[in-house]
Image (cartoon, rainbow over all chains, first blue to last red; front, side, top):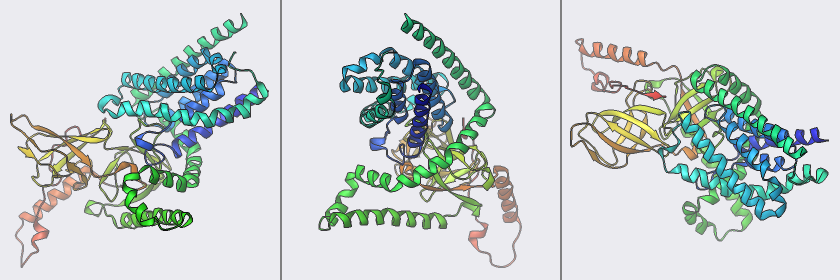
Amino acid sequence: MRSRDVGISLLLVVLAVVAQTAVFGDGRINPFGAAPAAVLVVVLACGRYVDPEPALLLGFTAGMLLDLLGGAPLGLWAMAYTVVIYVALRFRSRADDGPLMVGLGVLLLTLMANALFLIIGTLFGERFFTSTAVIKNTLLPAVYNLLVAAVVFPLVSRLIGARQRLGWSA
Amino acid sequence: MQSFQRFDRSTSLMIALLVVAFLLATFDVRSAGDGIGTTMRDGAQTLFSPLQNAASAVTRPVVGFIDAISDIASLREENEALRAENEALQAQVQQFDIVQAEVEFLRELNELTAPDDLPTVPARIGSPGASTFDLIRWIDKGSDDGISIGDAVINTQGLVGRVDQVFAETARVRLIVDPFVKVSVRDKITNQTGIVTGANTDLILRMFEADVVREGDVIVTAGSRFPAGIVVGTVEQTAADDAGFGLDSTVIPAVNFSRVDYVKVIVGYSPLDAELAEQQAEQEADEPVEGPTDPTETTLSTEGEEDAAGEGSG
């Protein structure tokens, strides 16, 4: 049953990557010049129900897919998402405290993912900090992710969590 | 205890994954576009392109509608004119406008010719990259259509970017506002040359020998890696070279990158060919000519004469 949940999670991540690259972004749905990081929300939502090891692999895979379809060097998003999902796993029992805590978690973890990506990318020679737009591109996706989370978390809860009801504890 | 062990295992796994990602990033940066990274990207593009195109096609009307709503300022006048109409008609008109604008744009793009009538390949923007930090566009044409790395990408407004990665059926375009992209340019008014470098939203202009650039001056490609004469943008602020070390200013790109759906890729351009053609034209101009001549035929522009230092993308 658990492998089936991992399979569903992987499918959701792939769908999120397709949506992220085809629907959101510059020239698509991009309010105020920034787009939500929908893939991260899906990873966090799925990570709530699957075991820690598959959750980490899921985060790594999602990051790698973004790297493969993006313009930055391979592995940057993979590193950022792996660290973020690891942190999320550490604190996932707090999600039982309610939607407010989930929202706060999504907000902070998105900020963390973007900040990590910027820092690691800069270490690998990317030039993210040549414009003040970098602040907007870091903050706005975190806010947008709150809206995405409001849709994704209940959906994932229905698809996976309804059968498991494991909560956030491992 | 079991929970502690599980997290202990997950910590080890996280470190292992970080090492793998770090190695991949190092290899990818070191290989500079070749090697395992390109192979993996090619595979991912092959797998995801059909899904992305399908998702784009399905969501295009919705995306266009949301995009129009987000641009409230420019829609205000249109909204006033449409106030008397009912909601159903409004939706139809908006949909019609989107389609008409696309048709109009495609017509203009079809009539767009590259400098020196160089061959072009029309392409559609497939996806804009994976995050808000990407200054790239994926197009639905690749090496099968004759596109190669370094080709200039234009639309009706001007220079969009240059192809920096090519696969069989897709290619990646790095926009000129990317900080890695440098373009050798010429001030169309003063004919002085310089270099523009991407700065995420606009361009930084560096002129080495110009005394002054004025606000509103049109900046075009000077013609080394890119064909000469393609509009790059307009100077945002007047700047003067007071100390004799060159001058810096900013350039507003001619292209609105958020609105680029279709582009043309200039294929078959070689800086060497351009230079040879120019030399040939110079020789022909030096030779005595019989009978009346058309002055436009013997006029040599300075396009193509530039330093080309550092042009291209890093």
